[in-house]
Length: 95
Image (cartoon, rainbow, N blue to C red):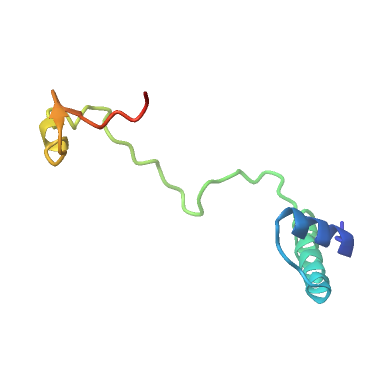
């Protein structure tokens, strides 16, 4: 697959990127180089290779599913200008 000059200009327009004609030619060459590299990657035999999420095998760190922030309502609203029963009081903005 290769990219032509019209495709580069169209993508630039859709991306709202201003490209001069000489810049569009340079971008076209760079995109074709990238696509050529991706085509080379598709030639690699990956049969029997397990997919991985990291280079190093590791287990997910897990935490206990427990409530740890209880009884902090007073601390949370301590700096608020107005509160009512641990709720923030704000001016009415909708009539």
